[in-house]
Image 1 (cartoon, rainbow, N blue to C red):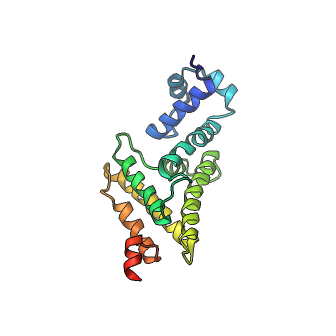
Image 2: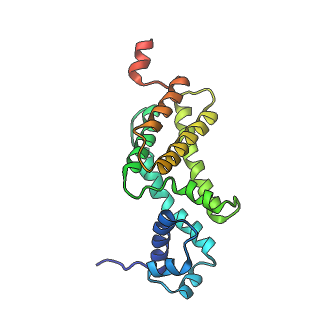
Image 3: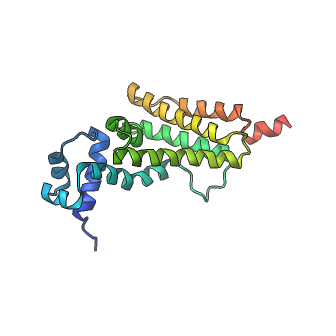
Length: 196
């Protein structure tokens, strides 16, 4: 026996899809119609559309992160774990309907850094940077914080370029990330053993 989705869940799901596909400026009427929920019900569940934007992003953010980041049980090297994020990003860019990083898209559209949606977006972008930094610490990099920010910029820039070009970038993000890791001495195991 399956449990029917609640009006709140339907609103969050519809908002996640429509905000990503059409942007956060989509009207409340269209959101409610897609969710099969009345406007009255929406405003009983969420104080405002701004709150719905933030809640929707927060509810869909963890799944997006899981698509990108290797799990803690993955026994690969820090370099491989970091590059896996860019390889997975490349796979996402080849899917139809790719509109870039949902966190960057939302923050850019909202423009207000204090908007609840921007706060949620910033939190998730920091989580990616923190993931990179933890891997770089494990790899023994001298300045893991700075390199983690650079890798995040490569990720965001690659995503934005793919949206502008309306196509995947044939591994450009992976190549750029690998170059940054090489420059920091985080080399592939085969190269590292040859250098000894």
